[in-house]
Image (tube, rainbow, N blue to C red; front, side, top):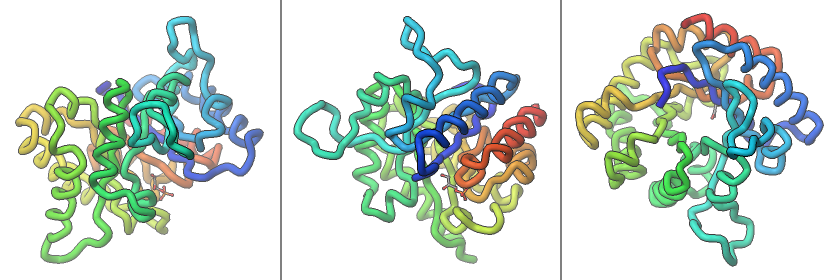
Length: 261
Ligand code: 13P
């Protein structure tokens, strides 16, 4: 993964219209073009992806600088066929998607088990895209049982992978209690938990992977708290919900994080 910071906008089921989606994407593309230390990724709802993307060049790459497309889901089905309602990872790759969010707590809540998450992850990796694997505890207890929960979630989603595949994974640490909340997790706690995730990766895949794994933080990130979460939390980037469909807020966040250097 790049040593640049990665700011990923998870638009969820927003905005309501294609026209609004295009406007957001146009503004973010423009802001991303000025970035030096940061890459921006937007993950619009599936019907809007192609209209929000930069143009595909003849080499199959998108032509907007520092601006990448992501998707919010990929099917567990790896081949085209009779799978009503499913969208294959190969189809996403074909339209220029580079990143796919996997295992978001909102999808786990609707029924994605660790096994399903692992299958989606594999489908995305098999297509050469980068999965953004979301993990996070629902509550923080005094005794630290949440750390075991976190470790088990990571093991169950990607523990069976070969090291060479695991290298491509981005982990998004999203404590469920901080999603859609009034405040983000304290940057000091983000730092502590990211160290724990690195240790889990080191135990699973070898010491070097603990150092190399890319970790994002998500949960009530705004343009105001983003620089501290990056600087003090020492994460490689952010997974942003509400502020990613607020044009001035997301543009400001890209600028502010880029200044952290
Ligand atoms: P909010 O930034 O709205 O809290 O959402 C976080 C999230 O779920 C990103 O995936």
